Length: 392
Image 1 (spheres, one colour):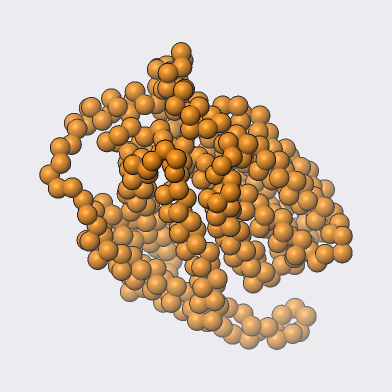
Image 2 (image 1 turned 120 degrees about the vertical axis):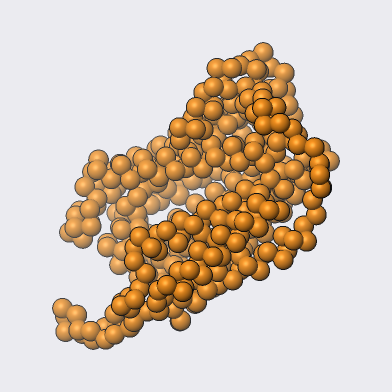
């Protein structure tokens, strides 16, 4: 409870300080553009937050948020291990469905509030909602004065866990697969510069993406949860390859009579639907890997592997921008050859993740069998796993 309390309090205070020390309104003025037309221009006020100050506030907010989030994940992981075998995964799928439902609702609400009012109202909500969590945290029940294993013993349990083949093999798949999900970092620039998408249209893409992300979570909860983990990843990876290939058609202007916006909406949104389906199998698997008594530390370590791979993937996508010329000026001139090649390359990398699906157990029963495998207890596997976790 204390960790969650500190996390939400830090998140709230960072936004309150930002509100108290700067002007978070927007100044709208009419100006004449190069074509001689009167257009409304939005500008920051004189006392707007500085970039370093705003960045620090967001960093502290994110730190507090994830501090509390890790504690929430620990609770879910601990309770999920108490589920009967025939319903394993239902608790997690329900909790994450609630989480992504909140994201789905927050995206349009924040967009409307930002457009109709000002960023200050959004920041105020970001400051007040964490404060509203504090009384709820106080009412959480937790066992008092329970015996806690020494740090040395807990580290020993975690080391034994990561040396198990049931851990380093499937988590190796998670790392490699997410590392290969390299996106096209120039895609949004293409949508704005070449297709002329407005800020509102880009926001609509984001909102629909969150809606279908939630739909993907629900689809797994009620249907795909019966599939093997390997089957889920094989089918969704192939579908992702199809939708990524459709982006090449959009770049070339081949939309079969559909407006570019609706065509892009289908591409981007259904990619998030697929991500929603893929999200739960690995989180359910991670809970099965957590040793009793160290659920929080173990689950945080496993999700760190997942998130670090995604972070490296994002960095790689940025580095790949230099392979071909996909600058704003080049795209504006009508040269999209580099954009086409980059999209084909990133699609091929994303689909290649299916080559490692054999590392993933088919079912929870297969995961249990890996614990007794001849390679289980490999210190080399455990060392490589921890090295990747720490260095990433």
